[in-house]
Length: 136
Image 1 (cartoon, rainbow, N blue to C red):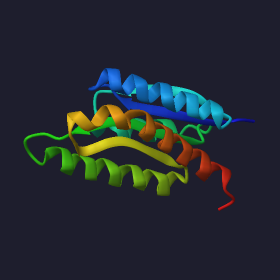
Image 2 (image 1 turned 90 degrees about the horizontal axis):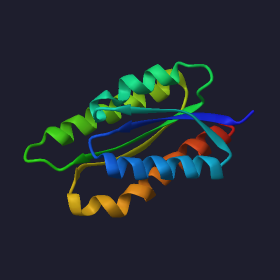
Image 3 (image 1 turned 90 degrees about the vertical axis):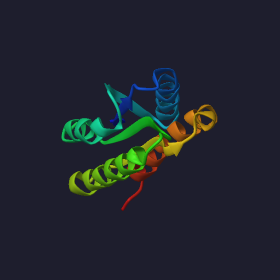
Image 4 (image 1 turned 45 degrees about the horizontal axis):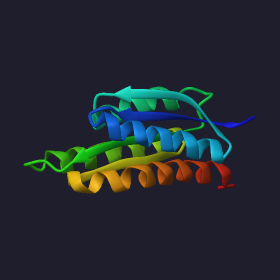
């Protein structure tokens, strides 16, 4: 039975997020994983709730969160990024299923986004695969 994962993707930066999705799906296939669900959310703040709704499903083995928290004029993105990260780590520990973090930022400049989109999505997907393939 293949490893089944889900993707949770913030759509605020839609074009870049679609490239992240494509890379995550390609990487999952290369690793022998099946992408069971792709859920688009408004932004990163919604990621923990969407992730939990997916992770409690028995057929989902792990999850990858993709999106961008771009640098703003205030520290809002940094605070949000810390809260989202903490919530997703908590879900991993609570539900004992890995969550790959493919969020760019917080604080990423627009000029830095394009070169990081595919590598971050790939790394996050591979991290889930490694955690699901290890005997710990």
